[in-house]
Length: 622
Image (tube, rainbow, N blue to C red; front, side, top):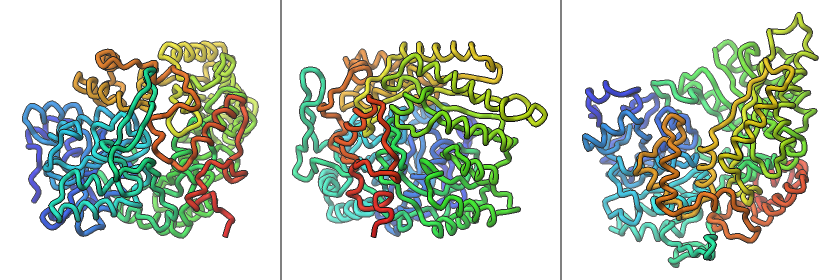
């Protein structure tokens, strides 16, 4: 019988005590005395969010398939438990064994979004692990970071011992084997990092030095250790059918963000939207086989008891065997109370036909993502979607029984004009008009509801827009007000609704996304002054961050509104994502000219990903 790390008194005094006790369906149980390696896998946000993350479930299954390794989980304690743990000196613990994280061999932290960076420091501090990697002794876990934000690890470089760049299924076994060998030989922490630095995809920040020009840009970034590689190439799974996947997903006892089975159907995307980091860092697009997916769909639903299966990808419509897969799922689970969820569909006749088969049309709303209000700006961002496509899709949807539509846009995109901004309201109005034009009065299910939402644009590393200037908070708000005013002028304004994202949060995200090592001090300063759970609007405090930038002498504008030169060295340039910088430069220049690039299946644009010799790059080739 496990002894819980928290007393009954504490558990009864906090929200959702099930976040901290483990014991979920399909939880792995091992005797820690019978393993050589203990790995704490962390999602630096509350349990309800972290339990929905597919990547951690995959690695959890993969690590625990090793007899010599016990992988356990840890999440950020919510704000009600955090002060209790500090006051009572309770070290952060793993859900499975309830043992302190500081006693593990590894603490692996997935970095899914920039606004979790202060939570990383919360995890370290509550675990009683020194925040700075340089201050950790031989008794402390190796702290490793991974996930999409690891493609620019520099703002967090001081806090991590190493980073894993790319997809986790490839060299983690090699890394764990080297750790085991080093441990057996009584090797030191530094000796293990030296061994790790030789492994493809592994970046050890302490083995690199940065020099800056007087203007603050990077002069030189180079290894200071013979084992460190000048370039770190991302790790990539070529054959997804051969990669580790989950046999028995963990099933929580409380409601989490995505309370369903997740079936990953492919990785990557062929579309090339110029703002989308995921579309570039996960290239080339690779599909899973139909037979593989059929078998896993049955296995996952059987082992969990979930009543919904979600097909996961960046663009589900581009999966070449989607129709066959959907037909199988409908036939296999007919009458069994299983819902099929299809995120990331393009709105076309095929997708709408598929959705009508798997959804109760009267209970759902359709989501379109035009991203920009005008065709000119959609060409700039390479969206590959015309106004005709959008309105035809809306018409087909309305004929299919839908009368609620969500439209997603971005404000602050490169080259954006007032006409582009007002185009958001005009396009929303046209969608509403389409409903009233297409559907006879007697066949309507009430008024049409069109909800338009705009987020503010953040330039991300490894996209053509990594050179782009970002708007200030005031500029973002001004643009949102221009759009709001235009909505008020629309004839069908009672059928329209408009909302937008927080500007202050977006500016901070922009700094963290393109930051260098100097940003680490700002993150630490903000954290020590109370910043945590910054992705939650009720806890985000912009004033704390502004004071941190001021205290550290770090100018925000250097990372946001400054124009980048084409030959500037970026903090992430030492990472090879597979997409060449020359290709991204060409795309940036073509964006400014409004030139569209065809998708990967129509024509190869020479991005560089063909060197991985797999996926869409090799379709139809022997």
